[in-house]
Length: 279
Image 1 (cartoon, rainbow, N blue to C red):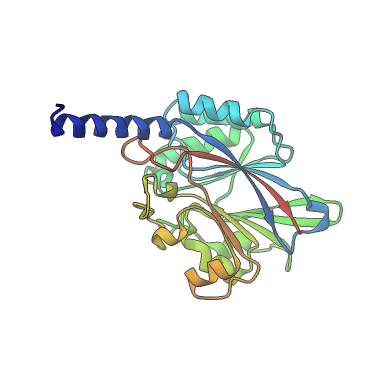
Image 2: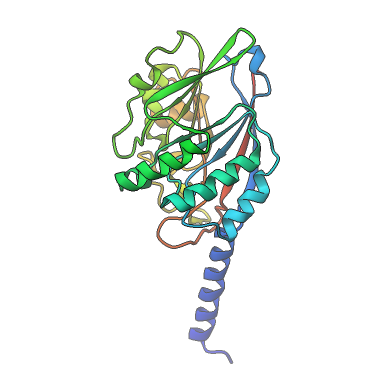
C-alpha cells in the first residue's frame, strides 16, 4: 500500500509540472468584436495584442510567440505594458513584432513593471522607437482610411497613477472612433466617460492561477475577479462598473508572462488577434 504522504507528494509534483507546462504554452486567441461606431472604411480592421510579456530573454515561450505571430500581417500590433526587463530583451521583442508584419505600424504603452525602474524603461523605449515601434505616453495617433479616422490613444500605466486620459485625447477629432491602450482595466470608468469605443488592457494575467468553482486567485485590477480576462461591454460591464457603458467595451488579456513564479493553471498565456466589425 502506498503511503498517503507519498500519494499527496506525487500529486503535488504533478500539479506543479502541469502549471509549469501551461505557463510555457501560449495560444492564439481570435476575437471578432462588434463596434457599432466603427467607420465603414475600417471594417475588418485587425489588431494583434501582446501584453505582459515580462520578457528577460528569447526563451522557449518567446520563441513560441514568434512562431504564432509570424506572418499574421495584422493592421497594427499593440503592446499593452509590462514588456521587457532590459534593452537586450527589448531588441528580441522588436524582432518578434517585426515578424508579425503589421501593415500600419506597432504601438506600445507602459505597465507598472516597466515604470518601476525609470532608467531601464527609458532604455527600453529607446530600443523600441529605434525599431519603429511608437511608444504612446498619454498621447494619440490618427489612423486614416479614405476619409475616415480612427484615434489610437495610449496612456501611461494606470496602476501606478501615471495615466492621463484627457491629455491622451487632447486634440483628437470630436466624435471619432477611439481605440485606447491602457495597461490596467482600472481605467474603464474614465474610458466610458471619455466615450472610448474599445479599450485593450492586460495587467491581471487572467489571475494566472484559476481554480475550478472559485475562479482567478489574484488579478490586482481594482475590480477583482469581475474583470479578470475577456471581453466586457453592455449590460455585463454595466453590472460591474454600476453605470451605463454606452458603446464602450474593454478586453483584458491573460497576458504572456508570469508574476512571481512561472506557473499558470487553467489560464494559458495568450496572443490575441482582433477583427473589428460594425456588425
